Image 1 (cartoon, one colour):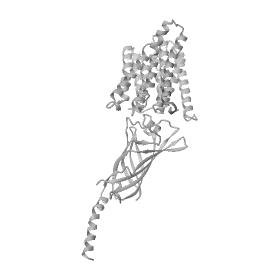
Image 2 (tube, rainbow over the protein chains, first blue to last red):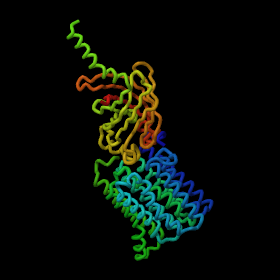
Image 3 (tube, rainbow over the protein chains, first blue to last red):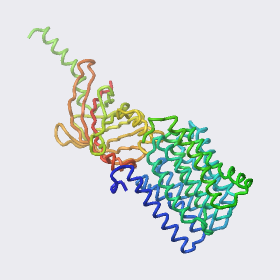
Image 4 (tube, each protein chain N blue to C red):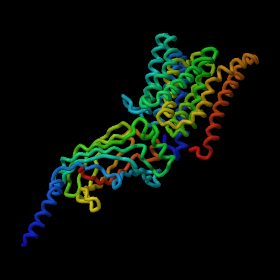
Length: 287
Length: 195
């Protein structure tokens, strides 16, 4: 994209627009074809892989050398496992894999740090586990609503991670976060009230798992993550556990109100995280 | 010729013999970091060439001016010691998108094939490893001087070398289009013979 743009900012915006459009067309096509959840479940991880390709300008060779290249294969293997689990109808195994993946990912990405920073690797694994738990539980909605809400949650969290990645000296992860967020926004837009939309094992293991691996890379390998901002951002994954009981208590049954309340709460955490970054780094923020 | 003069000449000749023998045989030299340097140049938006230097490096080579093809060379550069004269950027390039110092703390070059073009120049083909990726690279080398350092009487040999690489070959593809892909390397080496 950089060849068509006059500045890095234009290149990023162009990339987001193109990927968003591609995701929208793919999601729209699947909806028009009434594709089942096994297929729609591939939209998020496929978008992550395209976003990776756009951000890092490469499809890494196998076996991967270095954490950045490992991210791609974490997503590919996660997607393949997710598809297999869903195709085999092994929901229990899928749930177990979803919780095990961030732990395996932290150990894989942070292999070089295992001997001298076991606690940091363990903390990164625990963080990934919490994110996956928040994404895979607590939506308490019907399948289609649950899918779009999970995707929305992941997309907002990705957008919120972008400034943390930029501050963490990873312009590529910054781009990856925003590109992926744009694609997710398009997927959600195309699948509102689509009963066949699935945000299941492939989306969790391939899409969210890939993004968790990217965050673990910035944290464990580049080692410049603002931990406070990341902790504040992580609160976004608590949103479903907070919003739903409140909505039930106030008896808000309108779908639009429910979605607005959900998105609003998510944005609150993201806003707080961005504010934390700006407050702590101010003018040195590398914009 | 007096006996005293003959004795003096004989003593002087004997005193020079070890040095002559050392120069004739293949010697092992340690790179003297005080008088050596590694710099790289990379394009920034077409406006300038940003200059980076390696502050910490070490290595050794074997060299015999009469048999340069039998030389050897091993160099290691500490990634944490790379400087581009800007602390923010220096910190950034240590990250996973660039040199990835956490996983790959050293850059290495091992020379394999040494060719003399003429009495003062030649090439060294070897393997350059950056961020875990190894690629063949050829250095164009100029032989500067071999002789005795007048200060400490050590035996010294000096070379200048240049090479051009593409950072994308080593998996470093961040910000391509804004920051150049071609990287020029300039090396000045002074080696001290092991005693």
